[in-house]
Image (cartoon, rainbow, N blue to C red):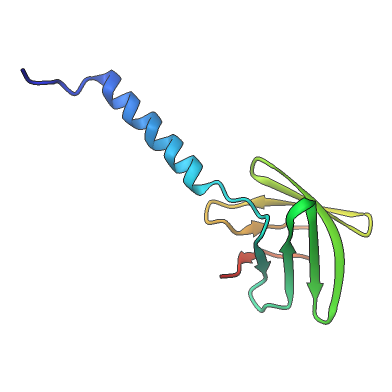
Length: 105
C-alpha cells in the first residue's frame, strides 16, 4: 500500500522544520563576547545578567536582559537596546554611539 504525501503531512514537516530552526538558531548572548569591526568596542555577556563593556582601555560593568530578539543593556544608568540579527550579530540603535557587533569566535 502506497502512502500519499498529503497537505497535512507537508504542514507537519514545515512546522517541525520551523521549530528545529528556531531552537537551533536561538542565540543567547550569555557566555558570548561581541565586538565591533575594529575590535575597539567589546561586550562580554556573563551569567546572571552581568556584562562588561570595554572601549579601548576602559571597562565598565553593566547589566543586561534578553527578551525575544532584543537585548537591553544598562551601563551607568544609560540603557541601550540591541536587536539580535538573523546571523547572530547585535545591531545597536542608529542614533547611538555603538555600531553593529559580531560574535567573537
